[in-house]
Length: 356
Image 1 (cartoon, rainbow, N blue to C red):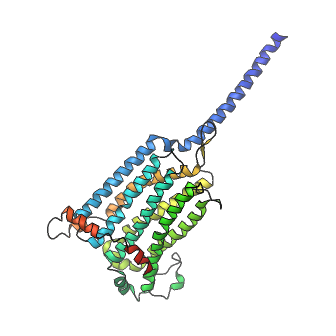
Image 2: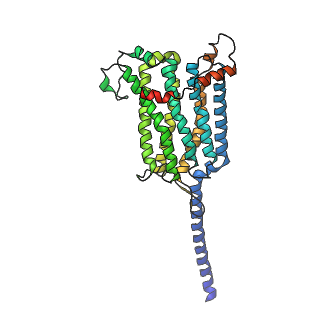
Image 3: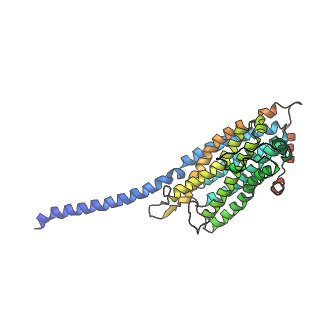
């Protein structure tokens, strides 16, 4: 009897063992699949690729800044241009550091992003000052040029109700204040983000009303949209008088660098919210990386790569050769150029501009 049943029992035990092994393999494969979404960010190749792009972007931009300083013939323009160009080293280095420390902590990227965001606000102010004061000679000169001209209206600009209106000084101040509000909102929001992250109340992609991300995202969206609208409206009003300075590429570069990177982050947060980007668990089933950290990692990697293209575009948007051709008294020494640049650093004007 035992001899007859033995093969049956053996086969049954083999089936059971097979089923158990299958379950183990399925569970293991599930964990492996979860980890595949982040393994690239953990691997040295992501840091290496981002690092190469960062080095190239910083190298190109620093060379461009050096050439501007060496050919510092028009300080009222070049001082603002140099400040705009510094967005590339600031952005790429902070993003690369966030990627380098990926895995050590879920919220490291928040602190590096805060530094990046503060300079981002200053770039908007610098570009606006370049257009207002550097190229066009100040608010009063611009007002004299455009006053009395009919406003450009369109459904896209949502200003069809202003069809019979004319440009005036109030319009210019609206554009300036709408851009500068972004400069004032960004730094405090960066500090609030750090505080919320330290209290575990800020997680990117978490749209819960109990989390800080939802409210910060709403405030940023309103602020960014208003600033972008003001820049477009200002360009529409001054396109004719800005034409000698080839403004199209300049406006496109600044708007792309500042605003598209923000909305790229929002898009990644939406992908996180719908489950495309999720938490990553280790072999024991514990959460290894939150979905917010993964989304932030991808954002930083993309920024490092994208800013290499931005550095190339900015090189054509703000060329130094134009200023080198203006030299009339031989070579300008590096020491004198650097001294001139330091003398042009009127950071206190930011607070004056918004209240005037």
